[in-house]
Length: 78
Image 1 (cartoon, rainbow, N blue to C red):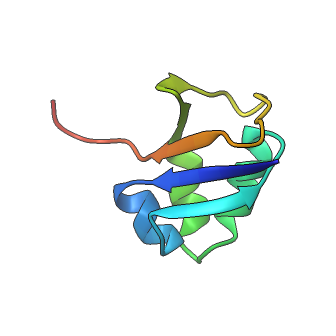
Image 2 (cartoon, helix red, strand yellow; image 1 turned 90 degrees about the vertical axis):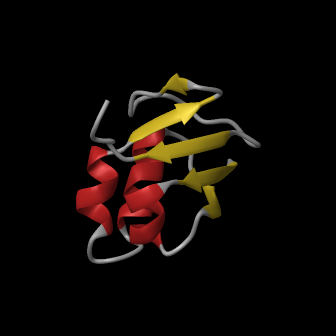
């Protein structure tokens, strides 16, 4: 399943890209793929929220071809 990943802030920095297209069947498999992008990626990606259409996704959620998944690191402030 090819999904589009949109990474923001520290996530984009650790991946070296703001947008990627990857084949992943679940959120957990997507996290695994993203964690391989750099030395800092595992730590950053493990703390990120994954959202599809504004809804937070747990790691066991199934992804579908054409999904757009936003990868958001925790933000401070408020």
